[in-house]
Length: 356
Image (cartoon, rainbow, N blue to C red; front, side, top):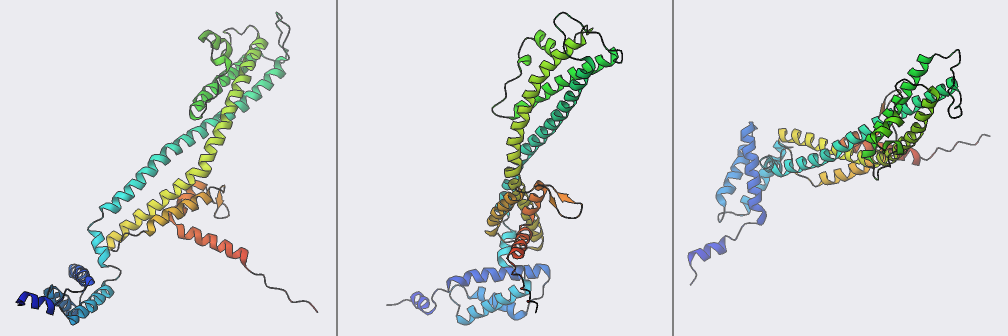
């Protein structure tokens, strides 16, 4: 014997799988329309309410058809807001967490590397200027004092050379050598493996003072000049070796790594700005295309690193790192630019007519 429940189950099979989801979407859109004051056709509203009351056993094909028609009307009336964007509006924690992690990781890498690159570049520039000044002083002192004399002989200054001027130049010479050595020692912390310190910088404090400083009364200017020059040659070699290592290491970082990181940071800034804008309009929906955008930005940043300053006008130019950030922020514009260049290379020239 078949009971009434079994008969009812046979008469009213389970609704289609999409019916419940479509009903939830329609109710979300209907609620949003009511909250924002969007006028909805009464027939559309009635179809949604009738579908809710028809679950689970009172549904039929007409109820399903009316629900789908109502869902279509709601989607058209509320576009670009969708049911998916309304659901995402109430659960933004995964998206915010992903953006926060990306921004934090990029900042944790970019900031230290950028600071170190700036510091090493500034020190290298200062050392280069000091070496140039020391070279000029060495030439000047050689011209003023002449060559070294045999041991035990003290030269007399030419009549046109003033002793105070010579002592001033010697003091500047020695001070600049000490400055080069100090800056080079700082630069040595940023390279691996580190360069060996000059021999004059390894001895006892008394030996270091004798190598880097002038005697108090400067009894023999030529001997003092030659001693400082010997020290300067070792210090200059030490500093120039470090400058070469820094130029290679941080030049590679600036050219190959930082542009990619800045492009990724630009993409992160774009996505956060876009997220804020879409959340305000309730049109945000998570998309797998965002991951592809990071990959495209990395490729664009690597391409930008191949260029030096990029000229954008007659007198304006943009540094590669700034351009890499802009490329990451506006990936579509960058690749449209590349496609335009490609079209200019593949354009077929118009053949000229032969002259009679």
